[in-house]
Amino acid sequence: MNRRFSKRQRQILAWIAGGKCSSCEKPLDQQFHADHVVAYSKGGTTTTDNGQALCATCNLRKGAK
Image (cartoon, rainbow, N blue to C red):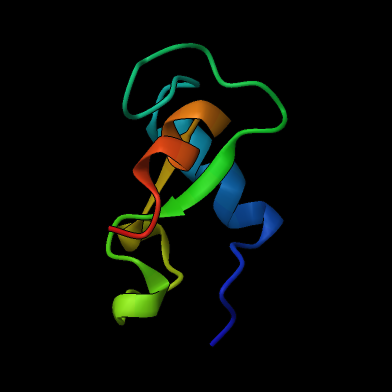
């Protein structure tokens, strides 16, 4: 399985989030991060069920916890 979300998956994640960061709720820009809720390194899958749209700041703050 691929670690990176596809373009279509990214579009779906942004739509689910209403165009806002799932953490801080700021509007997403084109450079938003498609993030694994359960980290890929911890067995999380690259699916929209395990994904969320985050701004770069929130995703970098989150790390692979």
